[in-house]
Image 1 (cartoon, rainbow, N blue to C red):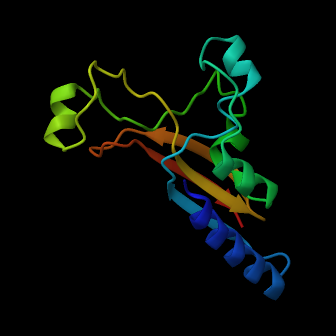
Image 2: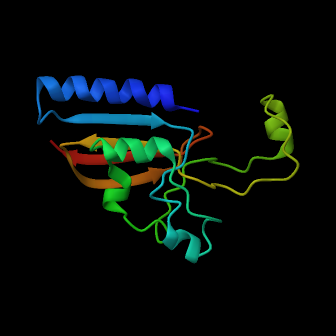
Image 3: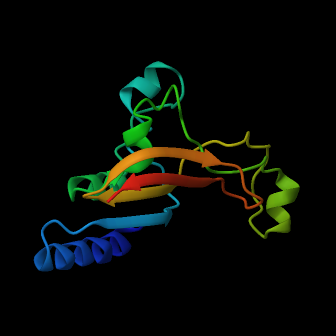
Length: 145
């Protein structure tokens, strides 16, 4: 569903690389899609995910040379899932208040990692997920450029 958006990002990366092969790039945000690095065979074996999924957004960014800075620091999605969404329980009433109704049971919190900091030609030194007053937890990273 986000293919056109990823196309624009990849076009911008190609343009940046055409001007400077070693350019340092950071890309951060709410991607509204989990990562293929989290829905892995290891996560399935551990019972953390129901099946392996190669999500297209994270897969395409990785293929283009973008590194998930959180996963660079915390490579094991079972030991450190880094979930960012939802930041608090999503009840039927809460979702209906947001006009997002249709959910019939409470979703435990948090359930997935959909907020990312990607980097190219940067070295991550640390990365963590921190609780915020938002409906998403935040990803923070320290990196060397």
